[in-house]
Image 1 (cartoon, helix red, strand yellow):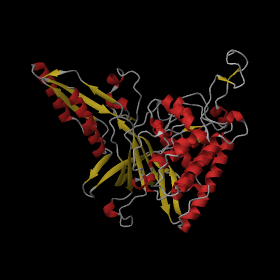
Image 2: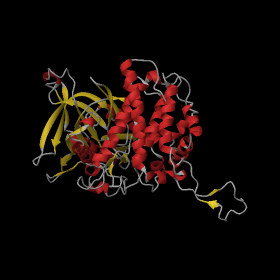
Image 3: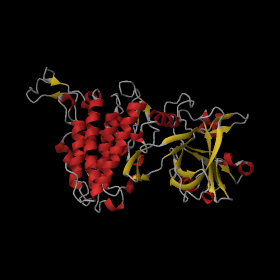
Image 4: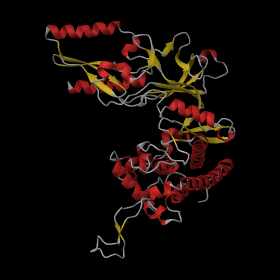
Length: 503
């Protein structure tokens, strides 16, 4: 029976990977004379009691299940009726509800390309589709390419859409409205078109949010205790980019990162939204007649900030190798833009070590590198390693020396990354703001260690707490530093030269 469950779980990955209209999966697991019916969803795997097929009662129960399945409509079998294959035009059609209007209307888009697939058993099951407003066979001007992206996912939610502070559709709409008319940010973020939580009709004919609760029903849901609620979210947005692996050089990488953080700070200033999940997956590359650009995406971890520029809610967020120390420790330090700047430094270190595409990957073993601890599932050990690694230039050498030497201009890149790290961590007039390592109980070098309860037994404040109060000025210096390098790199790109940017 255990092998049967393992096979079902593995098979579910293939189902999600290949069936883009799948919400949940039914399955049968058998072992000898016993059979169980299972249902797998974004964050649940439930199984029925054993049915003994050697008994009359067990066989009748199994037959009842099979007959009921045969009469089920497709949504009850786990299929999404709003994503369907159009046989006439030989492409998938995806329906969106335009929630911008007082009387919601439906818009149908036509699939051009699947750029993100859902292939995990549990989680958000995020899928991203490049679509057009006409079927490819009828759109002569598009050359079978679209400029609209649809994101379909099952994020954790809190309550109704109106009360959910983490609703990505609402946040992206605010970003689009807040940056409207500011041409300097055009193309650096996806612009909201329509979308939000998907809805279905319940047994009474009323429209309700499509959630894991509505999938399972009230009776089953009540038995699951504290299982987080997930809702089906679909958002249409304009602006399509390429993954970060399309970057062709360190020059382009620096320009892309500058655009991303310039956009990040613009969103913070004009929209009062903190991104909180800066990762390589959330940075895209866009090219036009003016050159290469970066694009910041994925606002489903973003939150409102106060007028003082910090987040009230401080729960951990982010992608593990790039999570800030505050988020890893899940401490009470105010979350500011500095947490996302810290993530950028980790991303640059990660890319410098492991590369961003096949051409920049290291050829030797990476298992013993210190940076691998940044992916440790023990979040406190991960945070401790990062505190040590970024504390000073001397400590940082242990990370930078393992940057892939085969990447062109990697020496200058090391100086660039360490320069950003120094602005964030070390270059401060107040000594309490310097460094990353702290101990609440540090004995000064001049003290008598026998008198460990005396006045010499001091407490050094956490520098991350001290820096949070000065996030704005530090962020300005970081952006200015990054702009200097990006300007040099743009010139190198235009010259097609081989020299690295000056440190």
